[in-house]
Every structure is written in structure tokens, then in C-alpha cells.
Image (tube, rainbow, N blue to C red; front, side):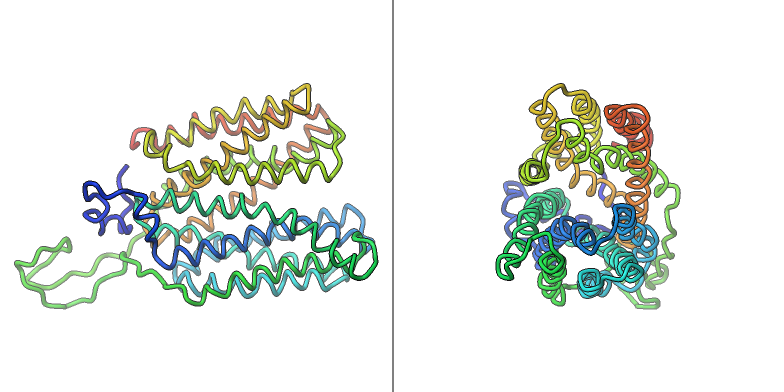
Length: 441
């Protein structure tokens, strides 16, 4: 696969292709940026799971009904939908570091506001603002990791990033349940009361703040697509890839936004997120309605799924080395589709859980591969903008997918939602991705 223009590997090809130099040694000597970003990703994983577990319970303890709690849960996604593209454009123009540091400061602020406020309008406002500022993480993290690694390192680093976010981060489910229990024991009150659950929400905000402090030491990558200074004399005999005329370096033209490429990348992702949203967003409800499981049992099932899936994602570089990125992505989507149908029609709990574990493993396997595939398609000047666009497709897909799935489960049957999700994945992989990028691969 051809390297993306102006990416790090284009200037370090000799280093990474030295015979006998193992990729493992490169993974042990990563830039400082990578370690700082991975550390913050770990904190982000804890924040997401702790907050998800506690915010709805906290709102319920305040006396709010499920319709309001559903609206409260939608506010962060709505904020992310409105801010993803502006955040990406801002990161491309202002720089990745200030935008990422900003989200590390503002996310705990608004998340803490959710935990301290009990008035409905302010609760909705703070949740909406938390979604706006949190989108900056999603539009800067992947570009920074892409620009801070070589091609050989990239998939491994992105796999480790997914492992920390989805695998180790899933331990926040256990931590988010333990904190209210601990506070309740100290205060001799019920763990379902307001004060213990408030501490659960505030702990999510505190985790984000602590893990975000090292981002101040982040180094802003230089964009190699920026124009060179004009009228700098250079020897005519000097080897250079920049066109010269009479010994003068000519400035590079300003790179235009590749709109057609963006469309080819975003349409398959929209279908993919619709299919995933139709299954993932309602999978816990499905297990409750179909097999009558209790919340504690669900927590154990999905915690194991998250950790095991995160570990499995670390094998992504091995698959990519053997088969290539696009083949891995499309193959996993092909295999995930029948697994979704298996879950929806499984006659026993054991078979349904086995199908969900297999689907989850494959989903986490292609997460870093898919991220590397799309980021390498554009130059570093437009990667944050593309990440912002992916934030929009994620928000839309995880709104439309669950809505259609919920209608199908209510008006047709519980299992038909899984057929819809499987159809989205097959359409995305077999028709669109291969149609757009099959020949180039």
C-alpha cells in the first residue's frame, strides 16, 4: 500500500527498511508523544465507562423519569455531532496540542457540572457541552498518533490505543460500581442514593483531569505540507524533490481538501456505524428481554468481553502483515454479519454470549486497522478534519441505527434488528469499500 503523502514514513523509509531490524524493537522505542497520548487514552477509557455507569443512575436518584434520562443520554452525542467538524478544522489550523489540552481541561469541568447540578435545564446544558468539548479528543488523537509513528509502528500503536481505550478502560465498569458502594458504606446510606452516585460521576471527571495533565508536555508535530520559505538560494546541484528555477526554491501550492476522497471514506463508515449502532446500543436490552438477565450478570459479561476483546486487538499487526489492511477489514465485516444473526436467533444464552464475544473480538481487531487505513489515505494537513467528519458519521450512525433497531424490535421482533445490522456491514464491506478502494489495494 502506498504511503500517505508527507507522512513520517516517507522521510524515514531507510530507517524502517534496514534488513534485520525487527519491528518489535521499534515498538519499544516510540516517541514521547505516543506514550503521552496512550496514557490519556487510558484515562479516557476509564472516564467513559465510569460516567456511563453512573450518570443515568444519578439522574434517576434525583427523581427524573426515563424519558428525561434518555434525552440526557442523547445530549453528548448531539454535542459531538455539532462540534466534530469544527473541532477538526480548528485542530488543522490552530494545532493538535492546544485543542487536545483544551479538551483535557474542559471535559472534567462540564462532566463535574453534570455531577453537581440537579436542575433539569442545566443538566442538559452541561451534558451537551461535555459532548462538544469531548469531540476534540476523537479528532486529534488519531492524527497525532499517525503523525508520530512510522508505517511499521502505526498499526501496532493504534492497536495498543484501542486496547487501552476498550480493553483496560472497560475495568471502569467495575470501578464505577465500586466508588458509590464505598461512599455509601462510609455514609451508611444506600448506594442508589444521590450522594454516592454523585461521587461516581465526579470520579469520572477527576480521572480525566489527572490523566490529561501530562499532555502539557506534548510536542506539536510539524506539518510537512506547509509551504517552504520563498526566495531561499540553494545550490542547483543539491538533490531536492522541490522544483527549482534559477536556484530558487518554489513554494508548494496550498493543498485543497480532497472532497471526493472524503465522500468515499465517509459513506461506508456511515453504513458501518449504523450496523454497529443497531446491535451495540441495544445489546444489553436484548439480553435482558430475551434471557431475563440481571444488571450484575450483564456487567460481568460485558466486562469480560471488553478486556478479552482489547487483548485480541493487539494481534492486529500480525494479521495486517500477512493479509493487508483492506482485506482484514472486509473479511471481518463478512464474518461479523452472520455472527450478528447468530446472536439474534440464538436459542440459548450460552450460544448468544459466545456469538457476542466472537463479534466483539472481531470488532476490536479491525478498530486499529480501520483507523490506520483511513488516516493513511489523506495528508497530515487534513487528518483532523477527516477525524471530525468521522465523528459526525459516528453520531449519525449511532442515532439512526438504534432508532431503526428499536422500531424493528418493537413492531416486528427482537431478532430482526440483528438482520438489519448484518445487512449494513455486508453492504459497507462488499459493495462500497471494495468498489472504492479494491483496485488500489
